[in-house]
Image (cartoon, rainbow, N blue to C red; front, side, top):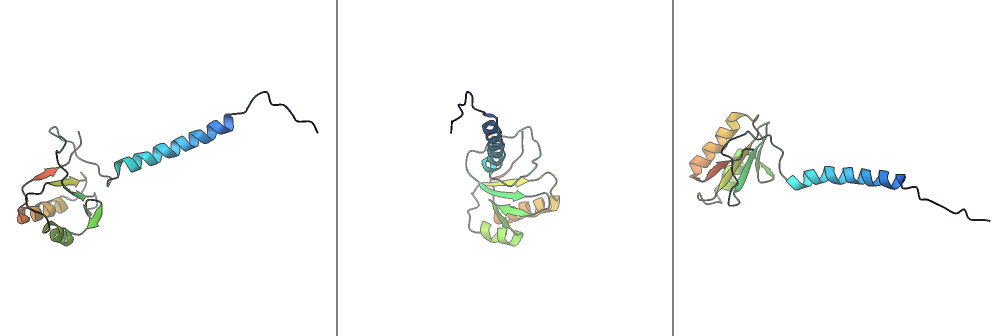
Length: 124
């Protein structure tokens, strides 16, 4: 039995596999890099970065509340805020299509608790 000698290597299947892997990596990397609840933030001309890590309250477009990454109700939020000092910075992230009433309820709760350092996240 005689072995056939290869003069060249077919790399097309290798390139196909690498392109599929590249698409998978890029797709998953965009979700992992953010690691946040997806919101369509409203624009503001005076947007800037915050110097400290605040408590983050998010309101989705359907009115669901999150404290950090954890889903939470308004009454649970009230209990959790009682554990923090009124001097703690608060960051409110709200989808631009969220019900205004949900935003007002959160803001009212923060005012009743005496929080003074409240910021709203917007996009540039």
